[in-house]
Image 1: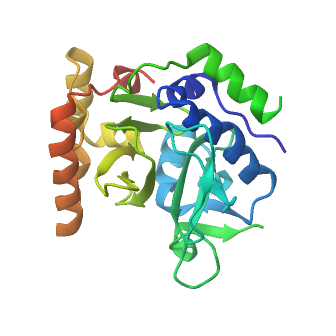
Image 2: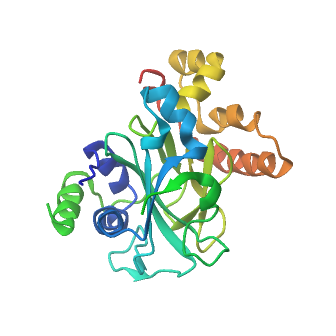
Length: 125
Length: 132
């Protein structure tokens, strides 16, 4: 299933440099294509979905993976990523990726994002 | 479209080799407001329901933030929406709204740190968020 990134967000990302664009193109794509985990129902963000989009918060997804490398915004060559971190991509009900970032892994040794048991309603992958 | 092709297309259309400039962006698809003070690589730290803080990997300083649930925040603070419609405000002023709903001293202190950092940069809150 495909995920879209709006041209407007692409323009915003480009303001941070070519490395940020490469992260959007390569890292986000890799996380969406082969996630280590996918969570459904972003609990801490459920209100924004219910109030603003008239749909169920359970439909919002978070894809998680440590792709092994990360891009500095101002550099075009990737660097090895920290194994204690994961890259998260947040996708709304319209399958638009509206946010992505690096976050810490949970202390439980699962390789899943910090606080994953309470942050999300369920793990679907 | 392949990732490399996508990256090239975006960079050709929007990219610039000029110096980084602090700025803010409202994304209606996520109902979130994001701003950057510097261009340092960062890691996210969820502060509360409203804010995720971006901390620089090298400096440990706040390099930006994402404010979520913007429409709800404006609904809870109607005067803020009126103010933004009548006269653009700066990000540090906007941050007062979620700060005053913080329930821990730690969160309040992080908000204060963000406000101090953003006050210097004079980034305006995007007016699109009150029209969305």
